[in-house]
Structures are given as C-alpha cells and as structure tokens.
Length: 88
Image (tube, rainbow, N blue to C red):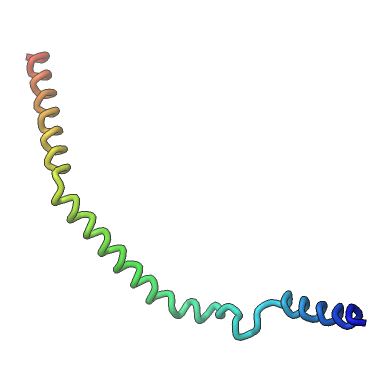
C-alpha cells in the first residue's frame, strides 16, 4: 500500500523538478539586457584604459626600452660602417 501511494507522489515531485525555473527565476528579457549594455561597456572601457595606462607606465619605467634603443643604435652604426667600408 505504501508503494502504491509513494509512486504517484514521486512522479509528481519529479515532474515539478523537471518543469524548469519558476517565472520569477526566469532570465531577464532582451530589452532589459540592452538597456544596461552602455553602462557595462563604459565600465569595461574605463577598466581597460586604466590597465593599458598602467602597463605603458610600467614599460616606460623599466630598462627594456633603453636597452633596446641602445642595441638598435649599435646594430645600425655597425651596418653603416660595413656599408662605408664595402662601398667606399
């Protein structure tokens, strides 16, 4: 007798669980998503700007640009000397 009563109850609980989210838990509609988009894009842009400026400032303060500039200057002067020696 217990099994006879518990099977319909189990079926009802399973049906309710698989029915999906309640209307209050449903995803927001498309128009409300579009309304908040400009603010989110502006926030994303400002965060990206801050990170880019911080990265550029970090590069400016490091020794890498100076070393690279010196290496290119030395390589260019060596190439110039080779051209002068070869074509003069």
